Amino acid sequence: MMQSLQKHIWRLLKLIEVGKVKYIVSQNIDGLHLRSGVPRTKMAELHGNMFTEKCSKCNRQFVRQTATTSVGQKCLDKWCPSLRQNGRPCRGRVHDTILELGG
Image 1 (tube, one colour):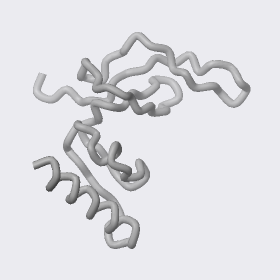
Image 2 (cartoon, one colour):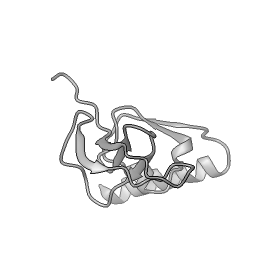
Image 3 (spheres, helix red, strand yellow):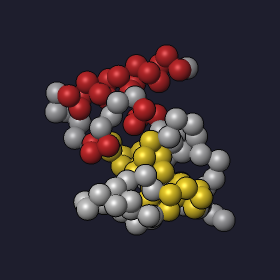
């Protein structure tokens, strides 16, 4: 199963490279497209991604090494590591990016 999925993603990457696929829209939250190398500018993850966090202030996104344990765009009790243009800390709070459906 995983091998066929890897081939599928590899084919999508090739189609992006040659200009046959312009954009990927995904409902999956597993982050597979992003982790496999599909550029963020070439995809939308409609329900979020369990491997990304987003700052509530500067909107910058960060890729995690492990899956988040929360859903519903909840605060993760972490400060944004970004710096503003003046070199000062952003001071925003980081949230998960997963939508909570049907709650």
